Image (cartoon, rainbow, N blue to C red):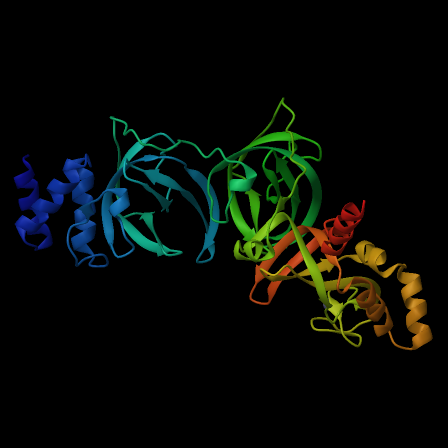
Length: 424
Ligand SMILES: [Zn+2]
């Protein structure tokens, strides 16, 4: 049967113009979509009307695809292909996500069923949907897409596979391969979507940095002190920083080599750090310009551990609070401000006393604010070097401090040293 005959048959079945169907068909066949698949795709296109209207999905280079394209036909090499389970309209679906590339560029895709392609395969997706995600076009490969494998592989100027270092990862990354050390790992029970489940969470490290992780389906290879290769991990934002997600579809294997974990945090200007939207491990230097409310001696809810006011938890109502120490110090370096949050241990350092001392002082003054006042006296006006986890949300930038030390390159100290040098 000639293409003309196929077009004739389709046109009469679907009651549409033969020339239009023929050009659609030609287009798909030119892109190596087998003629039967192409016909099926066109039957869906013209038949049920749900995706009807508009013209033929035109064959496009990746770089030319825009979010305004309703659908396109594109040929490219699969750079990454990672499976993930999502819950959609009440049931679980396995989807495949990754990047597709041709000579002109790269594009993210989501395949709503498992077409069986892998990284390195060259495919043609006939009539793939285009949607906008975060301002960028993304391909939707679904049931109305005619997918075929090309025997001639396309040369693309991109690396195939998802090898990455922790410092390069961003929320939204899919199908990444990492070689990391497990620096910290704990087993937790969470109330998941299918009831109580055990998960692992902790911190991974490599030469480039550190990031938190969650292993949703615990594997024995992931334990504190281990070096592992993780294939098909995805990255999501959690509390303002990228988090590595290791799922049931990830492959984890033990590594023979030791991973040399860099110990230096990235040092940045406050403004620059805040603009990144969140960093897991960063070092900032700034002047403590104020101590915020909710610092000093505080009380926490025994159920949820959140800070409570006057014995009232917003979730658990009237509770018997647990005393704790905390500081929220505003740091400013001229480029921006951030709130450094100090835990009980770091607070003891800047307060110069422990929880017992704080309770004693509060009893004596009959006012727990005396603790915050003392800290304010000690801290405000000094320059600090703080290392920790920065998260940024609509309420501002918070740096969950791991270390909080008075800066050595304090301008006053530098000036004194300079004067001493001049005097000598
Ligand atoms: Zn509570």
